[in-house]
Length: 155
Image 1 (cartoon, one colour):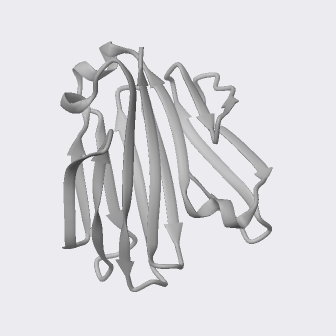
Image 2 (tube, rainbow, N blue to C red):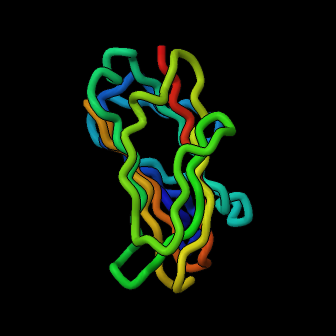
């Protein structure tokens, strides 16, 4: 999970056993256990959350699930999920989605973009990526807009 704390520090918490992770272009060491990293990060740059993971093709033999869900049952989402510029899923007036990405991913770089709005704006949205040896999440709250990018490198 990562998000911007009140003191303008970005907090990243990932449980993983995959090959590597990058945060905004910077490699973050992972030892197969839970890692937490807090670094100063400008608030204005935190509007688009970005995460890169590296997986082997074997990982994709099982479902790699994208889960986008509202903070509670009264929150509604509207937006879309794109993979490499093409629409995979659109959501309107729902409280969440669950999508298996495995059949859509290819060797190399796969850029997943999630953009939309949620109401009420004071609520929040959680984006999770769950698969064999992978568990990563992002959370946004308080402004009614979510804009996340997850790059999945298959090699």
